[in-house]
Length: 198
Length: 199
Image (cartoon, rainbow over all chains, first blue to last red):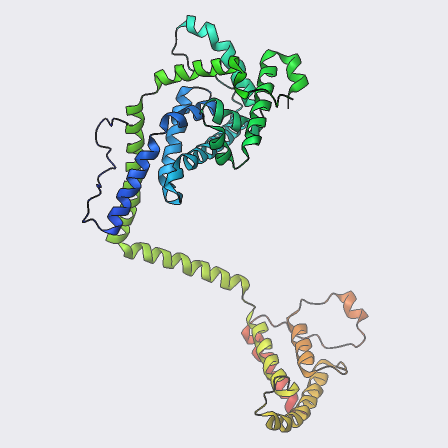
């Protein structure tokens, strides 16, 4: 259960029996949103898969939940809110990537990597590996990339991924295998990349 | 390719991701995240309700502005798409003559009356054709009255023919003034009626 720092400023409606229909609907909406917000860590990790670092992932996760709040009326079945939320997250991340690509094209930016808030020792251990992994994930075709991120970063089950992407579980598994093989081959070096790359 | 392998056997990749997530978790502050999100949602809500409040308090300027915009758009569309006044007159005349003379729009109830009227109008039509011939100095041939009238009016409203075209024309005819304004049209029509009386 999430411990709130204080009562959320937008949560001023509480469900009591004598409420009007409209007020009750607003209260239900807020309760549902708080339930959705419990998945913030998973969403943050999915965003991390698309982002270059944790700061960008944080901003992206904020965007996802803001969109979720504005689109919450389109959630037909509250029991399947996780699936719905991850679909919102996936779309928001894809939009973000498009904007980033456009900005890079216009401004001619090069990719930057993690704003380093860690010790040089820690960095030395895995930064190169991380950079290689990020490059390899970024180079994946869209379908493989989103499947890989939902599984590898979000930790979603095959069933959940299949529901989010509207594909069969078997397809999820084969995409994951393909994505991992491509990532490994790319991380091993340019010679492998040329053989197996997209 | 690797279809028979367990997808989770790629420990190396998993390990890098695990460490990345661990690092990211350290900088992720759940309370700050919630606070920022609620602030953003709150602001968006206030913005939405503020817009409504402004509208409900002073709807007159917004309604007036909307009406002005609509009027301007309407005027622009009217000026762009409405035909010039001469064409409107020609169309109106043609429509009246087509209905009366050619008798195309007959209903079951007044068919007999129309048949009698058609005979009179046929005569009237021939008379008009005579006037048109006199006015234009050109044979009109076996064309309907509507077409004959349209032809004359269109000639009047079309751009001036080049000298080459004039040389090629089978019958020399008088150069008639262009119908650019309502006054031109009135003059033209007065002349037309005068000819009609003469014939």
